[in-house]
Image (cartoon, rainbow, N blue to C red; front, side):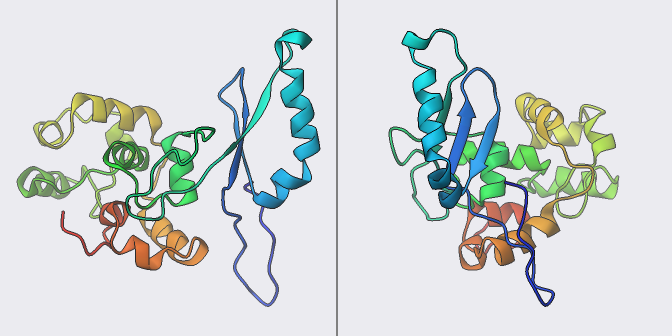
Length: 207
């Protein structure tokens, strides 16, 4: 899925929307597919799904699930009974800018961001260089466990542990994501009125 099709005359790379997710049932592996890829390989996928039945013994089963990024306000996370709810990282890539509160929190922790919900401790963190101006917590600060008084006022123990465990970024992803959502995912208008847009500092809704 991460492969792109190069344009001509200096055009930006093309990134396919995530419409289907291929899952290896015996592991945590997820493969993102476009509509065209899912249709092209449907005969192979059907064969692997049948191979996973109880009649065929302990053969690895592969399943194909529909997926839709949350790009509309109030859109349900699981729109079909057969849908899959992937990790927050997948929603970040797909552009789920209208995530519900639980998912939005998981996405925020994946991005390594601390919101300015309380100006006094947040401004103190900024003045000490413990967060960047966009709320990103640098890797070296995350690795300390974020145990200062200011962090404890802004983040729960669970949040601090999750940020440390799941955030993969060495530099802030905020600028890239803002451009990516606007140009590659074409979510400029939705981003400006979304909870994820608020994380990225480009939303019109209040903190």
